[in-house]
Amino acid sequence: MKRVILFSFCLGALNLLSADVPIIFLHGNKAEAVPIDTVWKNGEIKEFKGGLLTWYPLDSTGSLDYPTAMTKIIGYQGYDWGVKDDGSPAIDCDINTELMPDQGTKRVFNFSYYSPDGSPGVIGLNKSENRLETKENFPLWKRLIYSVEYSVGVCYRGKDFLPYCGELFCYEPPIYLLHSMGFGTIYHLRDREGIEVEIGGSYAKMHYDEDTYWDFRNLQGIIDYLFIEESWTFGIGLQGYYSWVRRADKVYEDTDGNPYTPGIFVGWEFIPGKGKGVSLFFKTYRNVWRYCKIGIIATFGRINVEMVEGRDRSLEVIGLHVVIKLSNKGGV
Image (cartoon, rainbow, N blue to C red):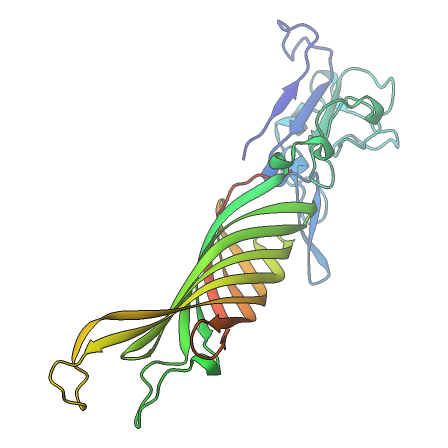
């Protein structure tokens, strides 16, 4: 964890032994952006988390867990805690904290650079004087998280694409594999919620019998609402499809005049079609590394197919998908 210490000195050549100035400890690590967050379990406080705990760690009772470089300064050379306007010690300050005026110079303050909602904050200025960048005036591209993901799913075909069954067995099971890849971005609406937009493609190939197969090439767009926890992400959304479809039939040449033999295989005949569809999906990811998540997506949808030749059909997109997602740690 990166820690940032801001020591203010009246004269750069003076050290702490002879200084008579305030000391500000500042935490600015995005991984613990919120100043303090309470983690509950079974109706009781399990632990405290947040950037301010870098210099003032708390146990589950809210007391100092162990001494740090900041707490050891208290009492040394006459240093004491800074004081907030309500008279409490300045051990948990952020942009909204009001300090007691004229409280002397040998004071120690613990500040979080980030505001309680996780957005950038500023210390040492009144809100009306704040000219630094805040979440609202950051460029949009800085407020986004960018990602790429790959998934493979097992889906039910639906009755229109069931495989050919002989007298004893079916040539293929009534499922297919759907391979997908997409590029997306996430915009945080508030501390633990966001909207994700993604565009990508997918491919599926299904055998009907030993002489025929279908393939689907899909352009897909996704929008979903995310609930973001520390280790898990949950989402619900819609996925739209535009599909290029082909039915491939083997072509044989009759060389022996025997109606009971297919003849010699000479190539494939492709019959095109197009499709449109939509699916509802639920997904969950678990963080396995700082830039990597692994999860499961459940889809419930259908693609309606119009063929140039033959009857129209419907392909079901009902299945479970395993997904791996890589993303940056952006977003403010």
